[in-house]
Length: 464
Image (cartoon, rainbow, N blue to C red; front, side):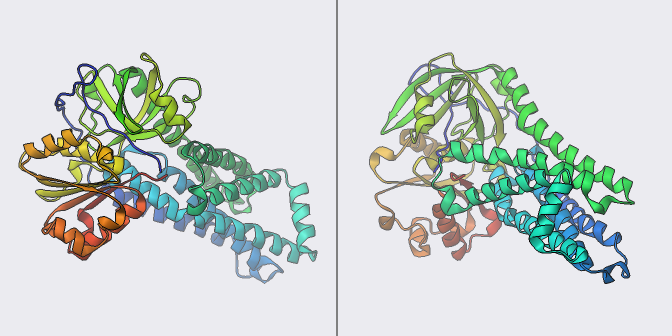
């Protein structure tokens, strides 16, 4: 499990003060997601229609024609869905602010098997169709395609990469990797896409007689690449240069938990809401090459941010050992786990372990008049991170803070009867949950069984 983090303003080592608030960006209308969904559906339909428009009924009478047509359709739709998957993980600001990166990643996972299955069908059907047309064996035709067509071999290499990435994404396999390894494996997605482009653009029969379709398809690839460059490289680089974050000091919080205090410029323009997270890139040997997603747990007050994390591997151990002055680059803020998603006056905030850090930020960011109940499950008293701060913040809202210390079976939050005992009016509250996926899913199901509306449930996941 990847542990996220927290942030709050601190004027001196060990002394925390309430954060100053700042103006928020306006919340984008949920219709943005509907428009995007319609656009994706139309694009998928157009991708399937193009090969069909190239084929006449008389041509389908030829040997292997049906298999070749099916191979063309699966190639176009499979590749199109691959591009959609890339865009879902590209952290596009308008979509991310409406849906949250957590939901986009879940959609990315759910879609992941479809492109691979379609591309597998494309390879088999196309080879089978051409073999039938040429009256040769399947393996012989496969060898001929690889040796006689310039870009087929590159496409085969790309397919092998996709299989590797898909295998690493299986939940049982994914849990065996640390975040660093998983992140590197997924970088090969971009390389695999680059290898697959020439085969489809230059050798694809679907574009024969359709030059404008070929241009449109190439522009779709270029637009996808442009979105990735802008949102994954350009904006983070600009934001990092603007705010000039550096490590100020590191403070132990006990039992492997540390507060890394950062100092930066113009943080009042960072416009981060409580409950959101950044992808942090610590610019030192061994850490600079990839970003670590850590939540903030308090509304930042310039010039400080505080990142609270738990040591769970070499990377986090290196982070808590950083020297003051180390530069830090950031991507974000990301996430819809914010007060802006709230639909009701009363809220229930449920966290497991260090999942309380974004909950703590959200609690601080709630407007006056909101009635909060906070449940914090931890294995021991020592793991109740930031409990003094939580108590103080809950008191300002005249709410309730309920620590649940001990093993899971002592506090079965997935049991509707137990959850109702703790929060009798949960059906009238917005529910925010942060913790491992199985924990969040269990609490969400229990709450919905008690009458909580699905749209009133907001989750932040700690798993990658």
